[in-house]
Image (tube, rainbow, N blue to C red):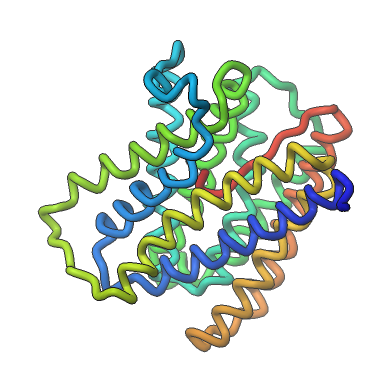
Length: 293
């Protein structure tokens, strides 16, 4: 029988595995239009959520007293999701994952303006270190005008607002409702991309595209379970395993070898986000910046 901390550790690990596999499939799916991939992320992402809706809420599960905040959360999430999809298709996997670790940096900045939090010198130093890491990773892109390096940064900004919005929503809204609105909004957005043309997938590709949504939905549910069962300080450092998986998958599938600058920048970004996280724990704020939700 596993203890609560062991269960939390297990759920975090399988959540990271699911997100990493989803990233691999998204990168593989570059033969299909982004809008078509978004459809599968949204539609199939609803499947795990439907099993969580209580029976007594099945007829009115969509009702909420905070529609505007849900809308803002969905818009920020959509911007983040589209950005990470484009980045994964055009940049090395390890590079994208390294930059996404900078999300807590932007969350710290947004918390000043959206939550009226005071950020003192300790966390400001962490923010500066993180930005230096992002610049080191992105420098080749800025020099050669490879604007795809901008997309993972946009992802971090969008995801950071999502973290703030979810912090507010979770005080009154169930997790499944927050997830439902987001997956539904992804599916609706995909309908506006029909003009780009869709490609009829074969059976194998259909299964892989469907796994993008299922893995994304399950990963977020498992992430939530992890924080439910375990101390945040115990399981959150595990998320940096995603970089290890990205390096392994990138090398064996696409023969991508991370540059020295990518590894140095990733180290600085990880140190920065870990410092911010530890400071939040010291201040008794259990804040998590999840991936795609």
